[in-house]
Length: 406
Image (tube, rainbow, N blue to C red):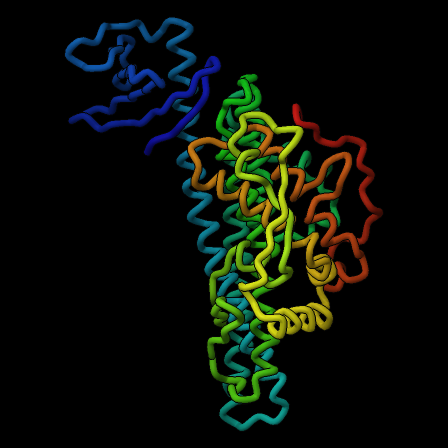
């Protein structure tokens, strides 16, 4: 088990190594120096190589607190691993639930069923109940793990992180989110606070805080769109039986019942043009005042007939997401901006503070604009039908994030 943490404005990595009958904690700084101390010992070794390392008294305040921070980071990493394992189980069960729901919908649309099909329908309904029960069971396990989770060093608790995110996003939108998305928003905010607490300069890497936001966008926007689009196109394709899990080609995108799609796939289906970040702007450490955006045109990626099919689908889809996606140019622009920032968090060496903040504003919102999640769930009448949001008065936003404080 290894972990990364911050102490006294410096980044460290740490791990525990088994040595014969004991264990050794090793802490490495950015210069490659290692502090190694065996469990229960008061004297450790510090240096780049063991043979030239110097002895150090680890009971001294600086070393003691450094070791304490490392142990805390390892405990957090271990609990995070358990949480991810439990979350992966929930994801698998949720995928099974969605597939079963799609199969049930196909059966329901075929109003005249044979005895064999009726038996299969009953079997699918029983399977759905079983999977939904397993999902709830795993959710309870995750809640217990989260309650036992230690706080990040010098930062906020899970409960407080959730409270802060709710206050910025609003209860209506929050309650419409997938549980995994709620967890990712909590983690994004906590990682942001963990890095920000040490008052780093803008050169600090916010990738760990930005990556969960990209997962939220994919889960809340991309996944439901393509699942329902596939179902819609399947019903329009008379050459395919309702009971076949056929693939459907839309432009260059191959749609299948349990396919995986990207933010890039979605923007092309919505519009021929969109506004996105320039390459120059994304290379800057601070948010540039000029040359931030440019307009992209990709009319060759999908035919007009296919794009009309997408618009027809959005018009009949009774979901809050459809109203937002129907704003073709604006939606495609926001999606591509999220895509570029998400890619920086997932694949780049470093995500700057302004890039993380921009990604947060696009999804959650700021003082001057609503985020995507707020815009999608702004229509209460549709939202309540889809996600059964709590019937409470809309949240009053008394505090909004700024670039210096989200």
